[in-house]
Length: 340
Image (cartoon, rainbow, N blue to C red; front, side, top):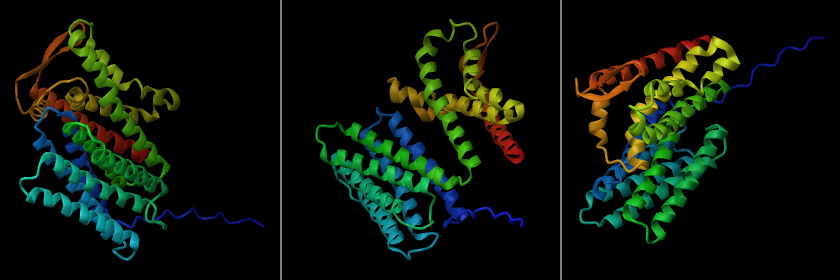
């Protein structure tokens, strides 16, 4: 007697609509960008950094409010608690902006309190039962919530820390929270989606941190001394992802190409972010990004060292290279995904 094949297990439906997932990604990116700007610019005035931190916390508070009120609505203690934590944190941040005359130390303490409330809200969300979110996302919320509360406690109760150090600590937590929102908005559910997300995350980390660390340390001294310096840098972008071609053959060449180009964007768009944060640079990031995205026309950014050839790289050419890489990454990943 033949046994009928069992149907595949049902994938749990997300309680959140598509527009909310898009909102999570957009506001998560806004939080990440704002926090990175704070981390990379410790030389800015404390007042400006506190204002930017307040703005990032507004993004995070609104996400909590919608997470509690969207989907199944305010029909459970968990949703009400999440919604309430977001409202309380948002009211606290908005009150800081509307009440003049507070000292910077007081502002930072109140911002830390707002962040602690958000952390407790995340912990509550991670512990709620049911199929509202996959286990990996609840675990991420729990870890982020615990770290948020811990940093907020340090800021509030550990004396002797410099004001800018406190702001930087809070910005790191906001960065992690924003990255988590992006992942939650993308909502990977299959093994293939999770694998692609991990590879993209690694490619960005590799380009932003690893390649920039080497490039910043060696670029100034060896950029015109080492033959073909920039050719070697380009090769370095693709080395980790050549493993895909060695193990899976050329069928994954589009994925390897996209990941290498992502690493190159991490290098080109994160260069002075890392330089300001870790190497003591004091570069105006807004002006630098204007150069990178081609807004300075024929202004030369650097000389490309290709070994046997050299040429000036103007702002417009750098901008075209960045836009073209983004287009190639999108098209290559889309085509690779449709084939598999």
